[in-house]
Image (tube, helix red, strand yellow):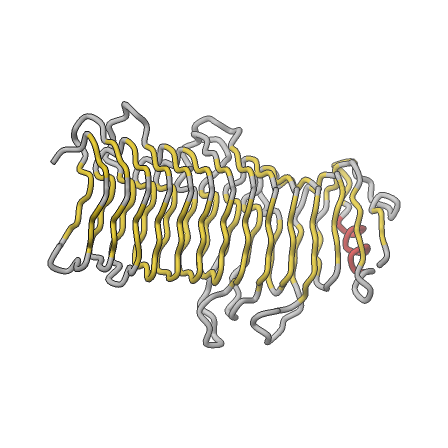
Length: 366
């Protein structure tokens, strides 16, 4: 496949000249053959659109603009539009007004070792009223700094009979940090916010919050099927560490959730759920009414809350409300101030088959 060095192709890379037309011309030249766009050191004021397959973007330069992955519309809901795109190594600077990478009608995309700085949304899946207009994305080993959202999946109900707009996304081993650590600064709102996902593996990420006043939850997922949240390190959410709503086939395991102010894990209307071997810790000496694991409105939870370590919640270690078929077993917890209750099952007349055994809870009120 052909290869183009964007500077040799005429881009200035001085951070002032608008290089968008040069970038677009280079990418368009790959439409029939595919090719590699090399972005060397420099700061390029440029936004451009990739619409065809087999294009690689790599280098060490800084893009002060957005990359739009806007593929060719397809009726095939599994391999929609264009495919086989790689974006590696570059920095994308959003200047607090732009998204980093926008996506629709693409499959088979890898985004890795990219540095996203001051983006509204680092990777943004736009809403399209078709089933799985995007699928098979691997987003890994990236560094996200002071972005409002890291992964953002927007949703509108598909008109073709399907349920989910985006499918099969791996978001793994990314580092997400806030450097604007002051009230009113530009920074994180949600690390992940997604609606309408059929298949998400969220694994091995580290998410830090700052203190700008805009922060909400580390992970927020609504309207999903087949969700795995595994091995993440989630810090200091003013609301919830992990929020999952209106979905089925969910596994939340081996995460470290530290200092969430409301709920370490909040679940609502879940079918077939597993919450296991997580370390959920509130701040010792901080007397706030937070909960370790909360499950509500899940009459067919059909799963387990098991083998979790839950430390210093202010209200309950585990709370189950208006939910059934929940096994609570093998959990270890420790309260503080002698105020919190270990397990609370609300409305027991509708919460049937909520079993408890082999838990070890200390310093909770009886």
